Image 1: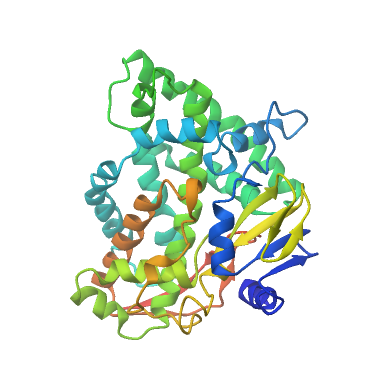
Image 2: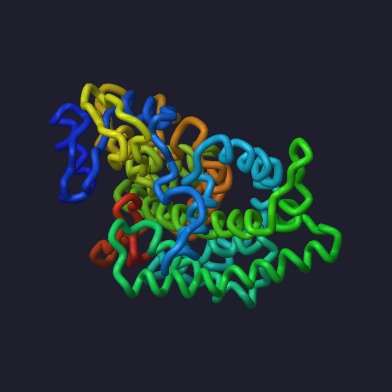
Length: 383
């Protein structure tokens, strides 16, 4: 059936429904999802709080330090510190290098898996540059990112996935700590994110070493996986719209609108995970404390009350900026400007290299409960 069929079933049931296969309530109405994303009674701390124990402790510790899995007041203070280090101006400074990376990755490419060729390595290169990781160490970063992301996005990960994620955490923590201490020994000099995070202060507070490590891991986990998925979804949408790449070449600003409509029509983050901290009503449905709730931003983005003919991909759609592809409220995506820039730059580079994109193989989606992205996307570029 796919996720969109499930969302329409929930919509037909009134917009909020219990889904036994998820052991959770799913919410799809635009107004309900938007309000719920701002509701403090729905906790983001689905990985729990406090010290972790047991065999999964290393993974749980990392997850509990991710901003998107954290509640106030700690979320508020940590986000202020990270936001000071990662500014819109810092994203603008990355665009030239991002464009060069795309051009290099697409050079000579005419046919093959576009996920492997572009959508996967491109955001990884950008994040490595942000963190000051040299190119010869990107292969390790790639393996760690794959392993941890596979654990994060699956509701019931296999033992193989769990063990792979644990090995990745064991490797990446000392790797990042060594670089953080090196930056500290240099007096925090440098303009990469690690150095900037070490220098950042807010009301006399600074990030601990663990917080710097886990923040860097958040960029690796969240920033890489979601942007890779978004890029694949964009290319798939473009392949189904003859003439759209030509318009991207010819019309300034159209690339950005393609990105926004993809974020509405087929976002990489489909559902946001919450747990009810106390009893509450969602769309007229009573939800007990402790119940899992999935806020389906992808379902909200196809609410016909808000978006006319919501199943149609339309880059000229009015009001597309109302989409919830990056969430809303205090947890609105901190990396949204970076993801938008990367997606637009990649699309514009593709438009310079190809007249059309033809999909040549079956679509293979990643195994995930809350995210949507292609495992591979076999294409032929028409020069």
